[in-house]
Length: 289
Image 1 (cartoon, rainbow, N blue to C red):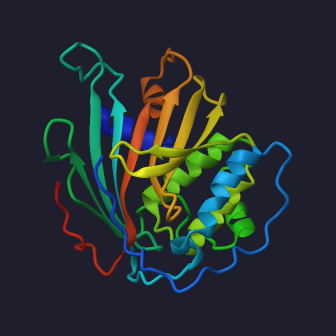
Image 2 (image 1 turned 180 degrees about the horizontal axis):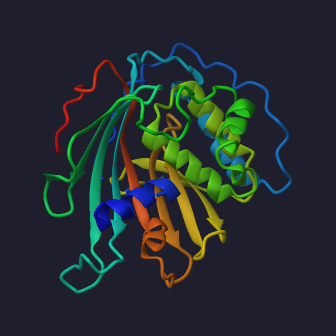
């Protein structure tokens, strides 16, 4: 495994990487459905952040919860930006270069599927071989599991993977970021995720933000000091659908860690390009766009 692959693999594992989004579940709804009962918020929940996050639940596209997307494969596509802190790649100024890798992944819940990676750092070339997997393509959730549509059940499901999400809001945002990179997020699951965020303490929310492509967003941010170098993580949510548009991680202090791959993992940007289901591993076409 080459160094760039190692850095990016760790980025995906720890949390982290720019064009337009495309999904297939934006059919205009008939009428909003109730959001369902919710637990009392923690006294540490910022009321303004909670209000801003819960506003998404009343948007027609999310409140309808209708899902017409079908197909056995969860299809996710995203572009990941980061810095090569190893020194193996340098920019014209001699500093670490920003790398850009785009991923296309098709995966069944049993772990069968396909992954195609594109190196867009200097143009558009195939970064690794076109990989097809038979029941060994991992995702955020274990094989056979789908994300729950009930908030409490979903929180338990995610906490079974990383218990820290119950106490560290940055770990929760990291988990959601990872989920969007590997799994189709249906409207009902999105609703559950928004409800979880609304009752999570120590989050801030900024209306009127935008991702790097200029798409309007609600920016939800948390900080952590669990890592050797503390970092801030922000998820940009589409205020009309609740869908994650991008995730950004920035260090709270200069990157002094000796582990360059760990440092890279807290200095990255992920832009989600597609999150849907498809009938085959050839839809859409694997291509550098």
